[in-house]
Image 1 (cartoon, helix red, strand yellow):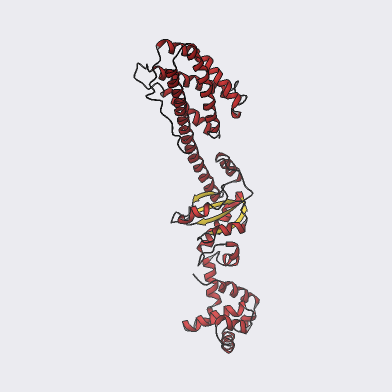
Image 2 (image 1 turned 90 degrees about the vertical axis):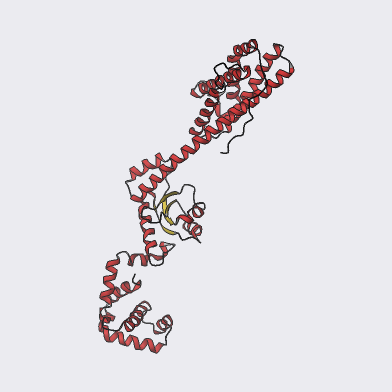
Length: 390
């Protein structure tokens, strides 16, 4: 919220006599009651508040403000302190209280306007009855509204400071919640953390990994409830976004043009599984953006050591060949299996003539023999050769 710019009540040129100040002070309870009644009647937020704690707060604030005003108007503050200081502090605390209650400043500023009008009407009527001249009355009017403006500014400051503090606390709570979700804590503990963070539980969460440099651009396109936290597994302080109830097509469009990795949607209390999937997508050779489009590759690469061992076993019959020959036959075997023996498709994928494919397959049959017809070997070879070695 922007800071409120106040007119100053200093140097007002008003110097009421001691008798006039005494009369004003004697009328203070009546003026305060009139202001309170008008505020409660005219500001909807404060309706029916007269008998409750809010009504007492309003009365106290009005009494304090009017007392400070009378001191200021008298220009007789013998101890050298600033006469408006207690009233300004009270206004500041009122603003903080509004922020803690989740209300904007609109109602409190409206209350100030109503209070200023009623106070002016009541006090000026008394001064007129006491024979105060027009010039003094004009200065008095200017002081009333400048003073109210300063009170309003103090309340706005209090509201802004409290909102900023509350926002930082809520942000820390939500970061703690996100980390608890990534750790996979128990549902009950997660629900309690969500309550503390004032975060409404969604049906699903989708983990998105984003480099820090792209965080704001991606985050601004997502649901405002999205949780954001530094990736605990990242060495570069990259971020994890936990996006609630996301439509996948929309989420992927939001990530387009950014090096983001999108995990699967999971029930909100199982967000850890989405995060782990996204981490594995990030670790693939050539990180993927949509893990759902690379499920087979993710399955095959789930145990890197097992995949490496399987590849060694499948290619063992080629171990005695030269590296160049071994590489050619390995790639031919991979494509022969994936294209189910269709020679022209293999030749097109290898950019060679069909006769070259026939020759190489002949070499493979010499080396592997009947294994090329064995379903178990074919399964192992397809898995082992599906993903290039890291």
